[in-house]
Image (cartoon, rainbow, N blue to C red; front, side, top):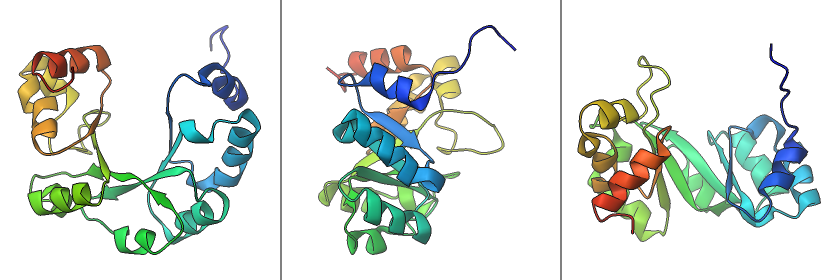
Length: 182
């Protein structure tokens, strides 16, 4: 326990209004409630909904948030692009999670096909649990303790447009020094 409480979702929205894009990760179970609050703050353009692409979540997104940016989370395989493309959903990209470099979602053909469709690809370098690799070992830990080229650099070289990192300053500095991010 601390003397500091948690901010409400409304407080967070109001504080972040007109400042950045908010990644609302894994909010699939309560999307209608989230959308009501976002609409109340007039922040639709600032919201990215990211979730596993279950049929229930996709149906809900299509019903209550078809114009919101939506990004499915694909673990090893793309399980829903075809379905999403046939729906009224603003399918802007995907988070690709893979435990090995052999996973279908990290193959050059797949990355190229997604980019040709204008999709943004999100790689996750965070190592929140060593038993659950999100990017086949190309993590923040490798980037910070060994060589950033083996973590963040590898993700960039393999076509990722966004890198999720707990070390944002160091990641941005590496990308700037590498000439990737000016």
